[in-house]
Every structure is written in structure tokens, then in C-alpha cells.
Amino acid sequence: MTTRRPGTVINLLWVTPWLVGLVLFFLLPMGMSFYYSLTDYSMLEVPLWIAFDNYAALFGDSVFWLAVRNTLIYAAISIPLAAIVSLGIAGLLDTDHPVSHVVRVLVFAPTVVPLVAAAMIWLWLFNSDHGLINAGLSWVGVNGPNWLQERGWAMAALIVMSLWSVGQAVVIYLAALQDVPSALVDAASIDGLGPVRRFVSVVLPTIAPAVVFNTIIQTITAWQVFATPYIMTEGGPDRSTYFYSHYLYDQAFLFQNMGYASALGWVQLLLITACIAVPYVMVRKFGGGP
Amino acid sequence: MSRRSRVPRWTSLARVSVLIAIAVTFAMPLVWMLATSAQTEDLAMSPGLALLPDPPTSLPGQAHDNYKSVLTDETVNFPLFFRNTLIVVLLGVSGAMISSTIAAYGLARVRIPGRRLILLLTIATMLIPFPVLMAPLFMLYAKIDWIGTFLPLYAQFWFGNAFSIFLMHQFFRALPPELEEAARLDGCSTWRTFTHIALPLSKTALAVVGLLHFTYMWNDFLAPLVFIVDRDMFTVALGLQLYQSRAGQTPWTLLMAASVLTILPVFLVFVLANQLFTRGSISGGVKG
Image (cartoon, rainbow over all chains, first blue to last red; front, side, top):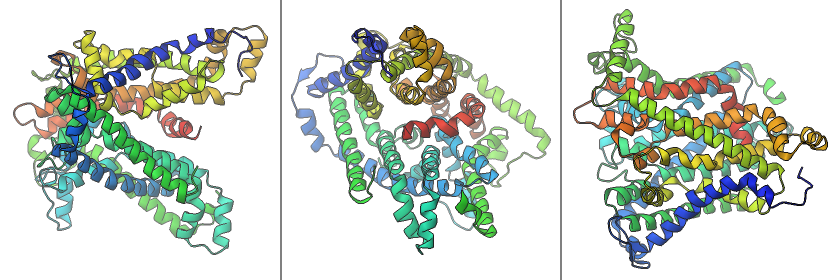
């Protein structure tokens, strides 16, 4: 339904505040960011034009590569793991049994816990001497590591912790699974297809849009990971959990290199776009996707 | 649903057991936080895995002591941080709801030049991570003297919030247009149709948008960390981190009590609205 009055310019009033907001809080900062990324700027002196030197410097910056590497490792492990866990849970929840409704609430609950509070809880759970996780491990005879202070284990701990908040993905997968036509699944099993073939050729094509959506959201989230490592490991030990957004934050607000931080921001945007485009193209090609 | 009724009984039993195991796993961190928050320091640091103090009747007293100690801490003023967060969140959520609803209705129901482009830009801004924007936004806010005020945390929402606009837009598009058309035929202006017909039909959607934005703002850590420099203006999220990181070891029992206090407002809202959260809202926005 649209209005039949000819004067459409006056209708722009509906979106004028939002357009002003888009310009002030998105387009303007993005423009400023691009300009400053071409300068040497510490906020104390006037920006000094250095063209693409910041971008060139990134290539020789070993900390930049380390942060990219850590972020990619985190994303490459946590995103597929989250997909398996959340799809598995959604599949189990896809039943009318009353237990399912209680479990849904409990699985979703951690997603509304503030990240800082979640960080405190998991600091305590991962505590090497008194934490619940190592106590549980010693109960089955395993001597748990000093999770957050050992190389490798710290990254593993952050990934385990990230699985605690798969609730949103579960809700989306659950909705998608409920759209899978049961007649199709029945037909496939009458035709003698095993559970794996049934899942791959009947269920997966139907829920492909949900998979794409969740993967995109989790990719963006992975590139933004900041609060939990900042609080729990401070990027350590030995910068083994030093992520991209943390490096950007340090360059901007610890070292006051606003020009360099702006360049980092634009490169982050490019890297995220690349990380989203690759799986999207893959699903389009092989999954028959949306 | 028909395929599930034919599943043999033991499969259903296995499924229920696995589901219960999952529920316990997801709830355990929160249960452990609650348990620790009501223990003495000695019990929390003891090697056993005790959920309840011994005797269990000592629990209310110890809990009272722990929570009181958090709320009356001399260096970390939690009551003040709660007040700050409440101010910022209420200003942000009310602004976002009003502006986003108007923009969303315009985009969904009014003929606007460049409508598709505006929608595309709106979705694009949702995909831009905050770390990319935080440095230029800080410089912008510093230039207009907003650093040292709460404005950087809520002012932008008075112009609308991309996610809220997107959700409300999807919702308005899905409303059957007959009622609004009838109102128009009776001579209602578009604005009156919006306020008197569309808005009363959207109470649930508005509630969902408001609750999601409330949760987002209450939980946000990075924006306050970047924009709030004055300790008296800290939000709860910043305060909790300050409480943990200050000099001298903060006892785990008190840290867990402080975490409970931080989570509590969001959980109250979540419990009240759990039907809204788990049904319709999020998945509806996606499938739109």
C-alpha cells in the first residue's frame, strides 16, 4: 500500500531523522576514517598527509599479521564448531516433547548475559586451582591445564566459551528445521536413504539460507571479538589470544595512532567482506543455496 | 510432525536424556556463579565441589554479606553505575523505538524516493563492525565536546537504529494492509493511520525491538570503554571490569555476586518476555 498523492518529496520527512543519523554516525565517520587513514595523526597535532604509507606499513607489521592469524584461527575453529553444535542442538530440540521448551530457554539464556559478566564467570570456571572445569577433569582422572595462562589452551578456552552463546543460532536453525517438509523426509526414508544422505540431500538444501545467515553473523562477530580476551587474557599469553579488534583498539586508544588505526579499520572491513564472500560463493555453488 | 510420532520410544527417551544433559551444561556456569556468590571465601577455594554451604541454613546470611559488601564497596560505586546505565539505556531505548518506528513505517508504507537505496544502506550499516567506527567516532565526539557526557552512548539512537528499523520494517510489511486502506478511504492522513491503526497493532513487535535494544545497550562494553573516561560516569559493564581488575585480588565470591547483579536486570526482562524472545522475533526477522 502506498499513498496515491503525487507529492513524494514531502514523504521524505518520514525518514529524514534516520537519513541525518546515517550521515552523521556512519557515512561521516567512514569518510573521516578514510581521510585519516591516509595521514599520520595522533589527535594532538594536525594530521600529516602520508598517502598510503599506513597501508604499506601494515604489510611489514608483524603484530598486524599475528592479530590477523589469531583472528582467522579463532574464526576457522569456532564457526564450524558452533555450526555443528547449534545445528545438533536444534535438531534435538525439534520435537513437541515438553522438555524441549524448557531446554530452549536454558540454551538461549547465556546469549543475554553481558560479555563482561560472562568473562567473569568463565575466568572462575577456568581457574586452574579452584575452577569447576579442572575440578571436573580431575574427577575423571585428568590433570587440567592452566587454561588461560598457557599458549594454545588460552585460545581453546576462548573457543569453548564462545560455544556457550550459540543460542541465537540454535533459535534460527530451529525455525529453519521446522520449515523442512516432513513429507519429503518421509519419501527419502521410504526410498531407502540413510540418515546422513537424508540430511545432506533433503534437510540441508532447505536450511541453507539459515546456515548462510548464521555463518555471516558469526564471521562478523569473530572479527569483533574483543571484550572476552581483553578481560580474560589481555591478549596473552605471548599475544596468543591477541585479536584484530584488540590491536585496533590499542593502536587507537593506547598509542593514539588514529591514522594507523583508521587504516586497520578499513582493512578489517575488507577482510570481513572477503571472509563472508568466500563461504557464500561456496554455498551458492555446491549447496544450491538461496 | 507425523514423522516424529512413529519414532520408537527408546529413541525419544535417548533424545530427552541428551536434551537434559545439554540443558545442564548450558545452565551450569550460571548455577556455579550463583552458588559461589553465596559462599564464604574458604568454601569457594576449597577443593570440593560444593553447591551449598554447610549448614545450608547459613546461605541467606552469607549471601546477604557478600552482596552487601559489593554494593557498599568504597572504590567501585555499583549503585552509581546502575543509575548511570539506567539513564543511558532508557534514553537510548526510548529514542531508538520512536525514531526507528517512524522511519520503518515510512519505508514500509509510504512512497519515498530512493526507498530501496535507504533500505540497502540501513542493512549495510548493520554489517559494519563497531571497531571500524570507534576511532573516527571518538574523534568526532571529541571535536563537538561530547566526551565527558553520556551523549556518545545514546544520542545516535535518537536518529534511529538500523536493526530496530529493519525488524519494524519487516513487521509493517507483513501487516495485512486492509485496515490501513480502510482508514485512508475514511480520510485519515498517513500519519494518523500510522499512529491510530498501525501502532496499536504492533505492540508485540515494539516490545521485542525495545527489549532487544535494552539488552544490547545494557550489555555493551566496548562503546562505554571507548567513550566514557570519567569514573563517575561508568556503566555497570565497565564497573564490573573495574571491580575485577583493580589492585589487590578481588575474592571470587564477591566477583560472582557482582556478576549476578550485572546480569539480573537483563534476566528479569528476559524472563518476563521469554515468549517474545524465543518465538517470532529473531527468526521472523531473518525469514522475512
